[in-house]
Image 1 (tube, helix red, strand yellow):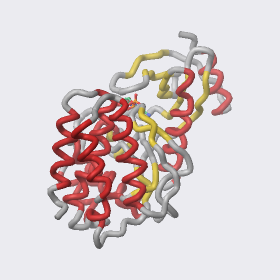
Image 2 (cartoon, helix red, strand yellow):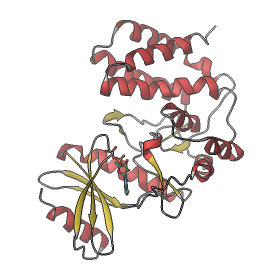
Image 3 (cartoon, helix red, strand yellow):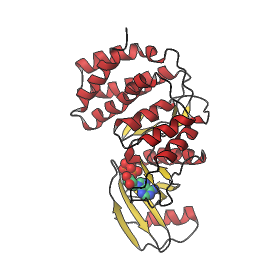
Image 4 (cartoon, protein in one colour):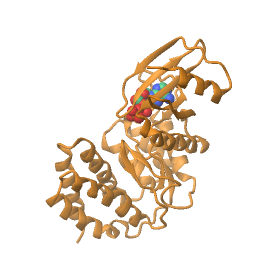
Length: 293
Ligand code: ADP
């Protein structure tokens, strides 16, 4: 692996020399390989992927920049993205995480609620991005249920059909999509900047005790979609929800809609990993359809 082009881009972007003392692989990512580049006094976090995935890194960097600009949460600053002859790469500020088990759930709840309170102009985003490695469409839309139906659920259902998950998933999924308005009766979400992939693995606590969120799949959407995902794979304690709701209370209909929102991620997991996610997606759709009378 030739690090020289990456080091040169870091130096150009930061305007200062970077003399590498060590390069270590960082474990934990799902789709990219990741490294810590260390000089005497500075460290960078570098993600690598195939050259044709540069656009994914551009979208990630734009999401990180927009989250950081909101100034409510600590976000790793993007330094530079580019491609060399071998890889596409994204270089971020390296953040030293606390490993002593310090819990920043309360601050995370507060700071996420403040992020979600900032008004945005429309549903969607200025560009498409990815969720995991799956394309995620963010075409501007004024109608949130329509956005969720077409750009989130139908898109994943179409991918699932192409992956061979036909019959029951498709018929019940189509029925759910037809009836989506039912879940928004009396509820008008306002567009908020979402992290978009907010599971426990994309959060941490820095050495000063501040929560950090990273690896986003940003767009403007219903804040409930972010909160729903925090419940999907666990990792967010009671303090988080209490603090969030003190600032930004959740509508009672969230209890049902969270399944509608998490269905998107389960369909995405089905498309990425297959297996048991088919049954889980079907059960979620059945449960949602049982709400329609
Ligand atoms: P992927 O895009 O492959 O899923 P992540 O962005 O989730 O990769 O990063 C993989 C792991 O690296 C994370 O789980 C986290 O522990 C660590 N990490 C991510 N960003 C940083 C950063 N800026 N500084 C230090 N460690 C990081």
